[in-house]
Length: 226
Image 1 (cartoon, rainbow, N blue to C red):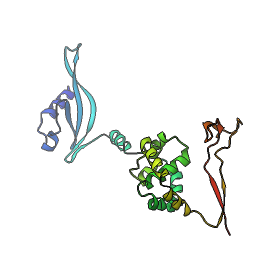
Image 2 (image 1 turned 135 degrees about the horizontal axis):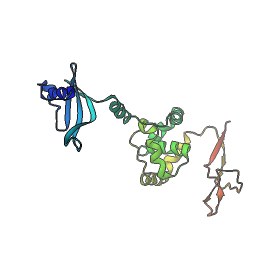
Image 3 (image 1 turned 30 degrees about the horizontal axis):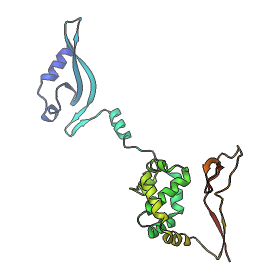
């Protein structure tokens, strides 16, 4: 009986305008002390009592002159929506020791320098297929550090094709890393192995059209200083 009187009193009493404006269909405002709280309610038919009865479904928050303060657990959930987890350590280290390369790419390849740099780092760390580069980009700190890179498979293929036709720019870029007068070049792209213990050896076609277990490596050169 006390609960019924209390609810009736709260529903019918005069509320401040800043409280009243939050009273909508399917909600109820309850005052406790000098504070006001909003709840979502509904009516269900009670067969035993032969009438409808009110059921409180959800606490919607505390009403203040500035608006509704949502329940703490909802505020925490909303905060989690703004949290992203990205790889940082490896790419940050790589960026810190290759900033000169980034600037040289900007000089010789002004159209593609961002994509070339990011593509190279991600391929170095993940040895991934081109179709997956975009995924590793958005989950890496590089996506915050170097924004708006076009790394779809189509964009990367077009970039590599275009760069491959710019031999002079490629040669001029690589000359920045040559010192001394004599160099030794090792081409390891045709190294193959049937050993079961070499997990990096995988089936693939080489430049001679052979489909055998092999390790795909880039050309390595060693300068001999005079």
